Image 1: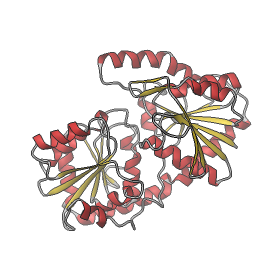
Image 2: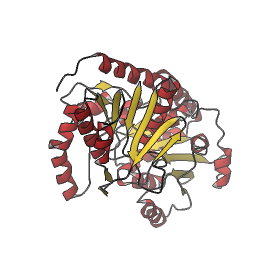
Image 3: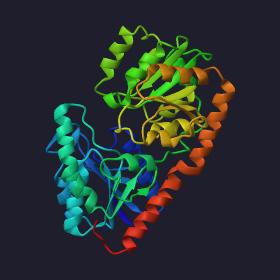
Image 4: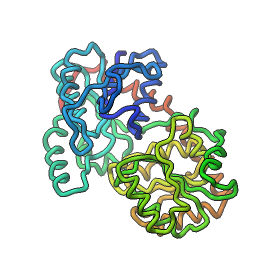
Length: 380
């Protein structure tokens, strides 16, 4: 098959969707398919290149609004593309809209993975998001031959896709890259963390919906613990200032963005991974899978999608969203019991091997592609 993956952002931009698209594309290429990633050129990147045998095509946007690239060239590109199927990933939203229009004109099968709802945390943003859901997003979803949602709980609570019957296919993790044999001592040494000190890890972008302020608040209850906060983004300086004002800057260590090779080492250097997200913009949490694949217990916020990745009390613990004290209590439970951490870590690794490897997920996606290509077009 000749497959186009449409992703508004892609490497070198780093995020959960970007990781998923890259891993899925690499796996599909390894199975003999030709895969192109159609994305946005937001900097001085080549318009076309090969990345790990995946063709990457970058189109320049007209502009960007609310972190959403506006790229009508996506539609024009797909009108002339000689491909078998187009698989778009949303949000950010407009790329999928333009992809849907291009596919409709060219009569190409269009699939969408609906990663999460659109949420903009200001009044005007909420108005725009509501208008978008009723117009452009409605058109996009109705144009899709198949819709993929990453969890049943997110599907059931989504304002957009609850009324459809999507395929539930989770995101995946490279379980060879993230594994319990990775050595984290180099990361501990680099950041002055003693071998016997406990480390709580967060990995993700420094943006509002990740809830990092609650992790910083929780650190005040865990005085002998180091917190490793990995990632970059618009709120990094704000979070650093908050850590200073909270009197925990010596224990909350911000690493910034790390290299591809260092990221697995960060998980290995930790004792517990935390995902404190506060919004539906966090619909799954690939970083949770990365931690589980490394054999680490996880603590996640009680929000749809995220809470479905683990079973509370087996691979990790679920805490009340935006409750720093409850987060600290759950962390204290795990840090105080090494045998419990080990049991949960082993269960997490086993769960990844059984449900969330890129090979398992690619099987499901490939089967869906074949189903779409072998069936007549139907409208929603």
